[in-house]
Length: 337
Length: 235
Image (tube, rainbow over all chains, first blue to last red):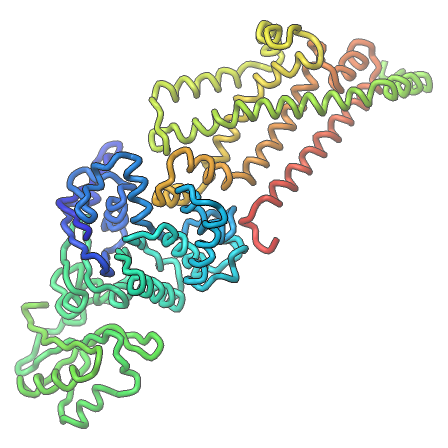
């Protein structure tokens, strides 16, 4: 378990002080994929660097399985970092080393014999699907491939925690998808706790179970991803869920009920849901706002529906839509907007 | 005077001097330059590393006083004209070599003049390195020494080779100047025959040879710098 307790970080500039983090409290269960999301400048990169003490917090503590990492000696801290590894937006591979040598690098640091390190590195490259690129240099690889090498490198020392700092932000949507799948795979098969820093809500909804929303250095909302998607309470959360502006600008009309339909990887492309709702149940729903996209066969995102037929119709519609796997439906009230 | 430089007699005499002295002079110039560069790198490389890692935000912050003294010392040595420096280090040269004249003795002032220059070149090479790569190494638990030896220097090799090439060609120019204090090589030939004895043809040939040697060093250096850089695709 990772506990971040009352964490604050101030950067002292020439004539001003920047509060990068203000009193952050987060608990991350072992074996989970935990998302930390925020706009650029929200302090998320600083927060993740406080977990492995690349940045020293000004106040507060970080406990990893009960150990206060801020109190560790330099040497113990270096040993800790071998168990809490990191991947980056810009991959940060050693450009003058082959992929194989890059993966060997953390093993060299701990003094593992060359032949053994090489064997382990080959296994890891196989896990990330790049065995054939072992002797290529990073510059010869695509961004997605470089990130795979970086992941293999991060796994070399059998970490307990993997910190992903905007790991997919430099990648195209298709590659992002495959890297996220790899991270999910690693989490499931190796039981590694993953902390995913991102500014893209789509990344959070794809793989995270819980999420903290960071704004101006403070956690403004924290909870299960599905909850935050269906009831974004804070302005920051609403902005992330509806990046193109909040669709709920219209006041709820007399006799209208609203529901938000969240597609969390539902196979929605085969069934025209809204049309079927009208056909099967005779309920007409107007789409007030939608932000959905399909990745492969699956739909992600959410949709806001207005139903005029009274509360009964709304409940029928809600139950009807909920019967579809991976679809979450929530009633929306005016005051919750 | 210049018209006399190109008569038949002058030409024959020059050919005689060149054929007897040039091979040795070229050899002396090359080995003095290479040896001086090597010694200067041995001293200058660690100092250049210290200039970068010892900074306040570096990976191995050193006391501010130490960094200022180091920087000041390097600037001081770099600001003394080489001709004066050669004379100033006579006592050191005598202590190390036993004499202040001759080819071997000229290596001492060359090293003293070149190592601060090399320290600054190393500094600039290491500063080019993407700080994210150093952060990545820190995130993997690398110690400062491991970061220097396994990340900073190897990742900067292409730039270090380019800068070493600049250093060696500069030192070659200095070595020619050491002809003044009796250092051997092409510089001595140019000065003793061309300047003291008005044999301009000899001087011109010596200078042309210096130009050719610089060109050769530069080409080899550039070639190795490019070849060593794995960031360039499709090699």
